[in-house]
Image (tube, rainbow, N blue to C red; front, side, top):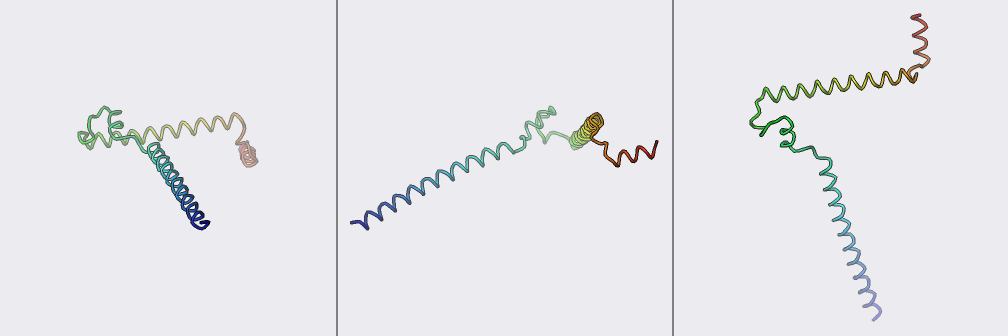
Length: 109
């Protein structure tokens, strides 16, 4: 009777382990699904609505190019403003005052 009881206990332990593993897999699938939703880009209807367009099919090629070009210009302008901001911040805290900078300043003086 001891062998049958041991086998039954092993079978029950294995089934419990399989149930826990299945629960963990389901939990991981839910987490992956939620991460996918967080990292996905906005839908085209939201993007189109921002530009006042009802459907992307109704947008002419020229308008698409204009919006893309405007986006590039805005990105370049933002990069320039960020560069100026951090340059001014570094100048005000003397972060850029290294030995090479001091040598260049002494040559020009």
